[in-house]
Length: 173
View 1 (cartoon, one colour):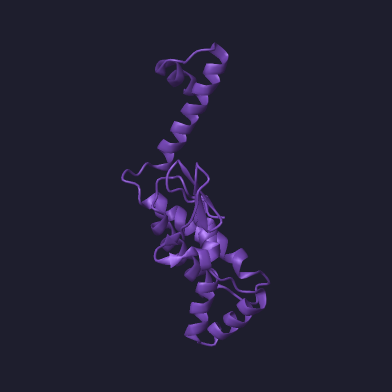
View 2 (tube, rainbow, N blue to C red):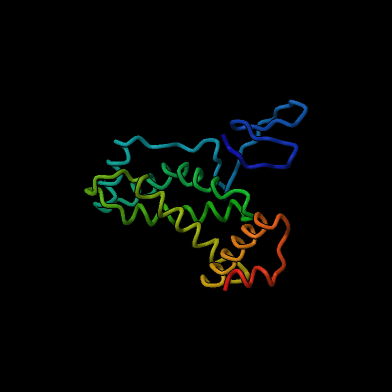
């Protein structure tokens, strides 16, 4: 199931979409030129074989590992849907994280590639979102804003009304 929305009047179901009248149409979801309706996945045995071949220097094995794990990237990109970012950009950044994970994966570590790759893909996407903002806000200012929001909510509960800015500032001191 793909959850990319074309408009508020359409919903994605499997590889097609249905409008509110119940009319269904096939519409592949294409991200960065990749038809996500037909992404293949690799078995654990295939992944292990390609990883061994890649470590021996076979460049086609690396490409097959990347192609076989694009569905993993897509599932992670869907977690970031609705944040105002372009899904194509997030997919490409996720693919970079996947490539880094494949390149740095140790087959003797005793974990699966996907277990190792998911945090790297998420990290790359979060780094992109963080660094791509027009305004960079320091960690201290973000922490202060969070504490102020908590105090505001606390004062709202206590007083039963919206507190004034001066009251929030006094409560923070």
